[in-house]
Length: 205
Image: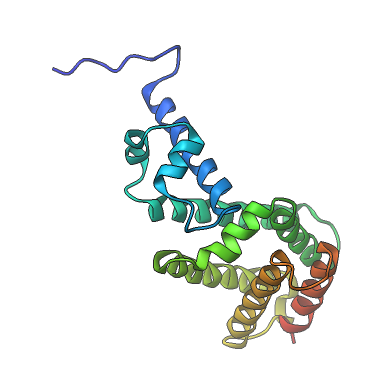
């Protein structure tokens, strides 16, 4: 029989493993969102997290598996914040849409690491590009669902709703990439204004 794994300083083995995984994810976000994909190596992530390679392989099989998890975590936070803003905002469809888009834009502009990781570096490898494509489709479906809830019978019918949602999500992503790269002069409020107008004019009849 194997010996039971005893807690260390009151922390279980599973909790310690979860803490190490969280440190690696945070290190991955910090590096991917600042120095970029090419310099976010497994060695750099381990050094940043102050963990050995043994602990890296405890949670991830490769660098890209870690970075996929980083991008997924940012995407999950975007969805949670946007839906919470929709749920908690009073007013008409325009007010709710503006609140959701503000939550989304604020998150990616207030913490540029997340913006760069989710929007720019997510195109740096084949596996990340594949996930980026999947996430854009996921957010387009979310736009379709929420537009239907906001506009009811006035929401666009299929397939126009999905077509316009993909145009909206893809265009917003490209706008944020240009902003993060310093290619356009705009404030986050300018981006929210433009996105809110685009949503209102493209997602209902």
